[in-house]
Amino acid sequence: MKPLILETQDLCVAYGRVEAIHKVSIRIREGEIVTVIGPNGAGKTTLLSALMGLLPARGDIRYQGQLSSGSTAVDKLVGKGLVLVPEKRELFGSMSVADNLLLGAFARHRRGLRDHAKTMDEVFAIFPRLAERRTQEAGTLSGGERQMLAMGRALMAKPTLLMLDEPSLGLAPLIVREIFRIVQQLKAMGVSILLVEQNARAALQVADYGYVLENGSVALENDARSLLDDPRVIESYLGLGGSHSIAA
Amino acid sequence: MRCDGTAAPRTPAGIGVNASIALILVQDGVTNGAIYALLSLALVLVFAVTRVIFIPQGEFVAYGALSMAAVTAGFLPPTMWLVVTLGIAVALVDSVAALREGAAARLPMIILKNAVLPVLALLAVRYLPLKTLAYPLQIAVALLFVVPLGPQIYRLAFQPVAEATVLLLLIVSVAVHFVLLGLGLYFFGAEGGRTPAFTDGGFNLGASYIQFQTLWIVGIAAVLIAGLALFFEHSIYGKALRATAINRTGARLMGISADLAGKLCFTLAALVGAFSGILIAPITTIYYDTGFLIGLKGFVGAIVGGLASYPLAAAGAILVGLLESYSSFYASAYKEVIVFTLIIPVLLWRSLTTHQVDDEEH
Ligand SMILES: Nc1ncnc2c1ncn2[C@@H]1O[C@H](COP(=O)(O)OP(=O)(O)OP(=O)(O)O)[C@@H](O)[C@H]1O
Ligand SMILES: [Mg+2]
Image 1 (spheres, rainbow over the protein chains, first blue to last red):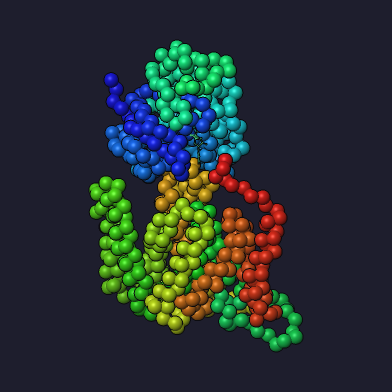
Image 2: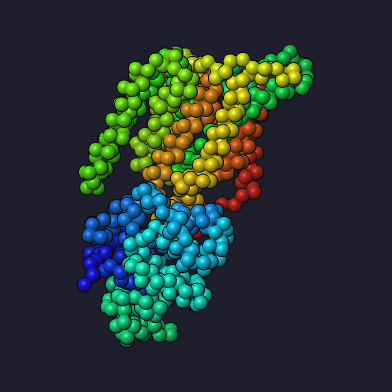
């Protein structure tokens, strides 16, 4: 079995006194795509924010074997190849596409790795649309282009583990398919991926392993293939008009 | 009108402004406006990146000018003791933080960079013949013991509360201002300082006399502003600062740490402030508390730019300089009132024409 790249043990995250994540334990192995699916408000974004060090958390987070316990500075984790594409994208709206991409390589630049020109060519090869728009302001891009830029910017950091928060959110089916194709392509390039998605079917189809998060806890976990065939998952997340709850 | 309000060109009452007086006023206005423009850019930068309204900006002007006065008189800048003391304090605070994180391996570097380096610099400069040093080297020595105060103050006073509200940051800022003011009195005493001009003399342009120093001021201010523009447009660190100002969360996710961004722009603000002081020290006597009013006028310029737009802030600052020189000619008793009253129509105009945008919510 491949070595673990990220592992949490009884992770709890609270907003004030309200606990949004309760005793969540997940594992991601090198080169795997792991997906976390679940209804709105389940705590998926909260989980990713805590993993990234954006939110304080209780319980253990182990990235590349090192305990980071939710208080490690974000820039340290980015420097070690843990990169998040957030749900809100957080682009630099009044800066050009090229500058947004360049800043994706900031952490590498700080460590003395000055290969961003080459990396940018690789990103442009994956997203030719970005190359066409390199001088355009990020704030004027279309929704799909914004998502491509957010992913491209994350790739500029040459991530070891890439965390994607709903990359298909609000995109046309054609672009969604394109995004999932790219996710698989990244896996082939050796990038480990933690994929948070509402589009459960597409996510489980590309993933190796999946977790179902409900009300801040893991309700179900299994190989992605098994989850696709699991009647509880089919009823709640894959069927039409599902109830979006397994525990209930 | 000079920054401290002295040496106003006076004419007998009742005589209208002829062309040469207008030229003198414009010259004064633009000279001071150039300094205010520099300061307003630094204020906009610091606010955009850290949300700190940098009241102590003026103290850096005074420290720069008075340190330069000390160096040209052959003394070491007294602020060097402050740089050394704060350096040791930063080393302590950073060491404790590193130990808490379990990163003991970083201790030697932390201590070397923050505590040992200032002491070495002090020892090195001690044996220099300061008084006979070339002018640019004297400037370098004066800056060497003022500019580090910028990042040191950020680390000690602002970084621990970096996530606080703008109001709390403002309160800290006011506190730092008073501390630096008091220390300024302690270090430099109550009497003012003046330095020799970069180049003595001047020349006649039509009916008016132009000092070389005013050319230096406007020229160097323009070069510094252009340099800052290049830094923000073309270097990755400049872009990182802009990114932090545009989207704080986005910048953090790129590994641009708020601490680094904060230290970087406080360094720039300290450099701009101290250099401004060195520029005006030959044409006006600077006291330990002169900086505050100068800084405030830069602030009026920054307000014109809504604390967000660099070109508008610079234009506002030039406007402040001109308004100041004209009002000191026509109604010198009300000079400051007129300048600061400029804020009111500007704020009214801004509140009517702009709508609240919150970049962090996108
Ligand atoms: N800043 C906050 N303060 C207080 N409560 C919050 C905050 N952010 C999220 N929550 C709450 O925490 C819970 C989990 O939110 P989270 O954004 O993690 O859900 P999610 O699974 O990502 O949902 P979605 O699929 O809609 O993006 C929700 O009940 C939400 O209202
Ligand atoms: Mg979410």
